[in-house]
Image (cartoon, rainbow, N blue to C red; front, top):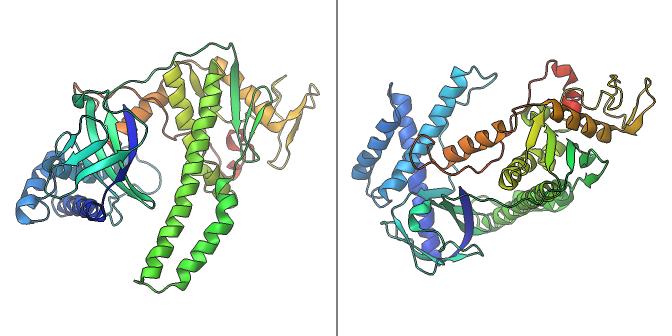
Length: 420
C-alpha cells in the first residue's frame, strides 16, 4: 500500500468545515466507546449499526458521510480490541483500557463522500459538511492510478496547516544493484550507528539542538493569559517547533536507511526493546531523540522494496563478546574500547558489536519475514483494512518496534550491547 500525502489549499471556511468534520468524528468515536462501556457484549458490528442511530438522533452527525461515520466507530473498536488482545496475552503492566479522545485531528473517508478531478490535483468532498473543492499541493502523480485502487482519503490537521493522505493499493519495487557487501549495524547514542566495517553515522540530536528555541517558546506560552488570542498564537508557534523536530527525525531516518540498503546486499541489526530502554531516566530523552524505531521501520521497508534480507538478531552480549575469539569481556557503558585479554584484540566498542551482530545474522534462519508482516498488520489496523478480505492491501514491509525480553532489569543499561 502506498500513502501519498498532499498539503491542502483552501479557504478559511473550508478549513472550518474540516474542523467540524473532525469534531463529529471524535463525537461518534467517543459515543461508541460509551456504548461499549455501558453495555455488555457489544461487538464491532453493533458499533457500525449504532452509527446510523446517531445520525438520526443528531443533526450534525448526519452531515458526515456514512462511511466516514463507520470509520469513526472502527477507531473505537480498534482501541477496544487492542485492550482485549493485551488482556488475552497477559501483557505486563497496564493493559490500555480504552480512553475517551479529546484531541482528534483527522477524519477519514473510504471510497464514497469524495471525488477526484481528472487532473489529479483537486479533491471534491460531496457530503453535507460543506468542505467542497480543495487543491492538492504536492509532487506525487495520483491520476495515474485507477480510482478503484484508492482505498482511503484522510484529512489531517497539523500545526502548519491541513493535509490529505491517500491510501493507494499498489506495490513498490526497486531493482537492486548487487554490491556484494554484507554488514551489521550497532545502534547507539554517541554515534547513531556503527557498521561492521567501522564506519559511523553521527547522531544528529535534533531535539537537543532545538531545545533552546523550544524553551523560549514555552516561556512565551506560559506568560500569556488563558483563552487569549496571544496564547493561541504562542501555542501554534510552539507546535510548529515540535513539528519541525519530528520532520527532521523522519527525514534523517529515511535517508540513512535508504543509503544503507542501496549499498549492501544484507543488513543485520540488533532487535532492541526501546519501550524498556526509555525507562532509564538518565537516557530516556536521548533515546527518544535518536528515534531508532523510525529508522528500523524504514530500514525494513526499503529492504522489502529492494528485495534484500534485513535480519533482526538477539542483542544480548553483542558488545561484551569478543568478535575474534568469542570470549566474554565485561564492561560498563563508560568503557568505549573493547580490549580482549584472551586474543589481544582492540576495537571500538560499537565496531565490535557490529561484527558480532553480523556473525549472529549468518547463524539466524527464518527471521527476515517477521518484521514485514508485523508492519502490514499495524498499517492495516491504522487504516481500518483487513487482511482476510479479497481486497488485501499489498505488502509494504517494515517493522513495528518490538524487541527482545532481557532477564534482569538491573542490567538494563547493558542489555543488547547498546552503545551510548
